[in-house]
Length: 123
Image (cartoon, rainbow, N blue to C red; front, side, top):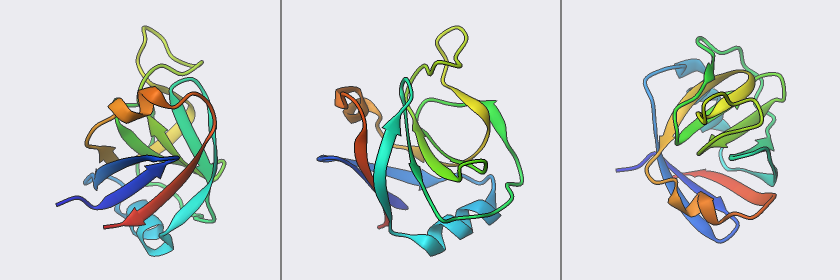
């Protein structure tokens, strides 16, 4: 069973919460659905949110398929490949983010040509 359904334009993705950052996860979960026009930054999409919470753990090197919260935005991010901040081709955030979920499949994101509409909702 999946925890999140994420629509990226006409692409449907699913994700599961990770065990890290439970305070951030709970704040996001209680704010669902979250929807907006997302900006693309390399192979990352991010969308503004009203969630305002301090993460327990943050990192800049991000696993492929991570769903993360960037407290400076505040925004929710999807990572599936290199960003302008990357070294050696790994996903990397511009500054520390809190990973809260993991996408089951990132391949639909490879077909996103630019900015997109994102919608996060509970399953």
